[in-house]
Image (cartoon, rainbow, N blue to C red; front, side, top):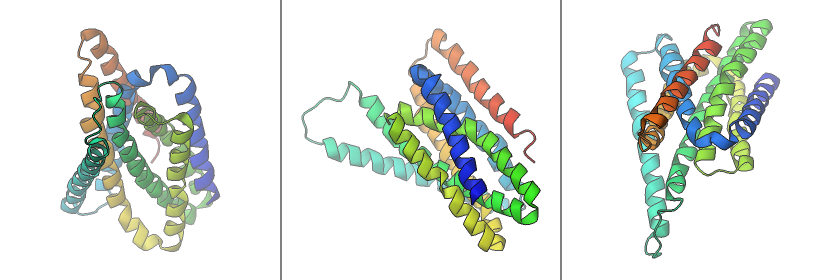
Length: 250
């Protein structure tokens, strides 16, 4: 419990400091960095780990499909709720409307992040049960790969119109799911360990959906060469950050 709590708070606070200071004035451009972080975390780290677990590939792919459809429905419900709220109000929504619409991506990133933190808690519990030293090393490694992911989350939340305080509080609540995962892993490790690949795949489906459905279309609206070059470079930087910080995790 101590490892999951401290790990979540340290990674979250470090990401918040970096996001709210150095990145506060360039959040819109940093969406590209977030795309690189989320896609590489999902496609180059979480999904390979899930498929290497020995779980049935067909079931994992079914989970991925189900996750994508679930996030599609979650977004659809958010759109319908927003449309119903403004139906017949007689206002045009051109000014600031994109930011309000981006709010749905903020809520979806919180769901995916919560699932990911829950899985990290299970992994930490498994490591501590095997060997306390291994548990400490695993906790440090998870902190290292959580920082760039949390930076990506903060970028999405700020872009979606969340205030700094609100973004931090909601991310903190999501990070506490690591404690719940740690408790579940400690007391029901045999069953929980079998859940890990599926939780990883479901969380990855959320990151993939958000990046492809919400963030990349925002980037495509700024299609000039002057905007495209920084976008591509920042996506590549996000990929490199994840590769570097997860290279020695196992």
